[in-house]
Image (tube, rainbow over all chains, first blue to last red; front, side, top):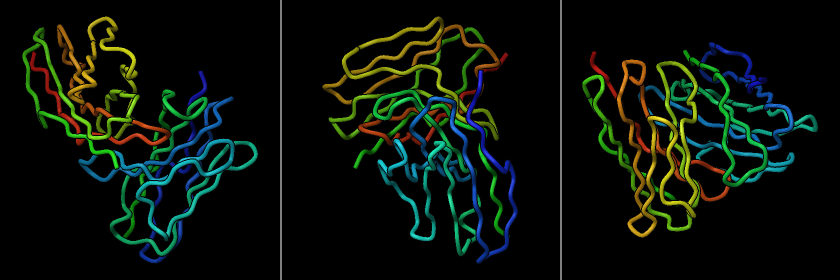
Length: 113
Length: 110
């Protein structure tokens, strides 16, 4: 069965650079979520989109922005990167929003040097 | 906002024993409670979930109970096996976002 696809899987950036993470949800899934997971921590919700509209917002820094496109894929844009942004970034998707099972992608490991 | 507390932070059991992980949540409007298993460096994978209109759910060796009045829910794993060793996260949701507990490192000793 098709799963959530994330690219790239690994990314190394310097401080103050920008990064773009991509997420391709499971076919027919209309809701996408982004989570940030630091080492030894739980995933922290950043932002979600339902039918291409932002549906909920969590602890996403102002330096980050995201959108969902007409084909339902999503991109997380991160600017002015800081050392503390180093983390695993997971995208998840679901069919419908509220209370539906979220399937996680393999994650993008971002390292900021 | 929602706050989820999870206990214990680490749990060691002998193979074949049971393991119980407990979570409490603060937002009485939360209505969806999934449990995820995460192996090192891998994605969280849903192992079981429960909705607020149900008190208990079971899937083979895994069961979850929910007490809405007390705002707590628990994961029960019976007949533990070495491959159950992982980090387990509970989560609570009202609307789209999941709020996770801090996680429990489960070690099953053979």
